Length: 305
Ligand code: FDA
Image 1 (cartoon, rainbow, N blue to C red):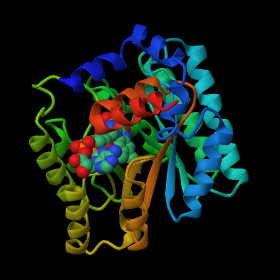
Image 2: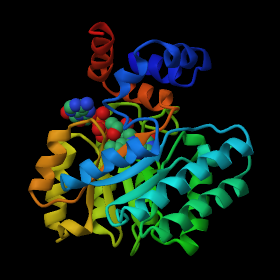
Image 3: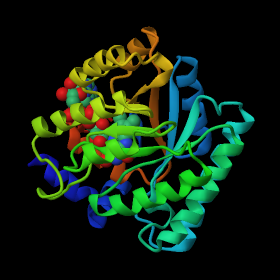
Image 4: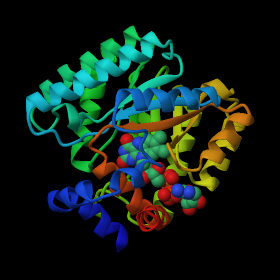
């Protein structure tokens, strides 16, 4: 119930304006977001890399409504990737891109063109891009765009959400040599005919998908904080003889940081998803919807100021 309310609020302009302008909001979300600028993002990236982690950077922003706004998002990624290149961080830091932020809802061709510019800059910086997966209505378009981009940039990463009833099939289609696939549970509201709604079904689907990806030829990127799923991932890696470099764990910035470092200590590859930028509202609300403890954390930080 609380999850539904928070997910609805994440799409509401009225609530967004109220929260964004509320005093202390920015400070309260700082646990989950690196900051507003490229400098902030780079500072956090360098710290995480220093701790043995890898990073994927997300410039916050979604649902772009005009081409100018989409262009500004692209420019921001280009500036970020230039800095990654100059700092020599390309082997450890990649970019995560939401196609909705680069114009997907306006025109698919525009989104392809914009994403292509970001992929080219990533390649020049010695790194790559992963396309985040968003609302279920965008899945077909996102997979089409992925196919386009992979022709020239084969390392472009895909994301599959295990809550989708078709997730296992998507994973089977994408489990080929060189294919980087992030598996997550899914963070958006979706109807019952498209997505599983119970945690048990979503988790079981995650395990089925993980089996397909770990048995396949691609590079699985297992994005979850769930201790049971992390344990099963480790067992599947042994079963399929995957070395630490042949798959990776992924977690969000600020969530289970001790577990991230524990896995690194065991020799695993762990990548942290680091969001930055001014448009943090939708991202922060989805994190609250996932876990009431995150909401309690933010409310506590309001109360203690
Ligand atoms: P879930 O939320 O069910 O939590 C399972 C267990 O994990 C909990 O019971 C608890 O034990 C532990 N846990 C979770 N949060 C914790 C916390 N704050 N502190 C301590 N323990 C905690 N979604 C999407 O739709 N599209 C996308 O492109 C992406 N991309 C993405 C990248 C990365 C790197 C990650 C980690 C996640 C995403 N997601 C995403 C979000 C994803 O779909 C999902 O909403 C969240 O990861 C939460 O799901 P969990 O797998 O962590 O399980």
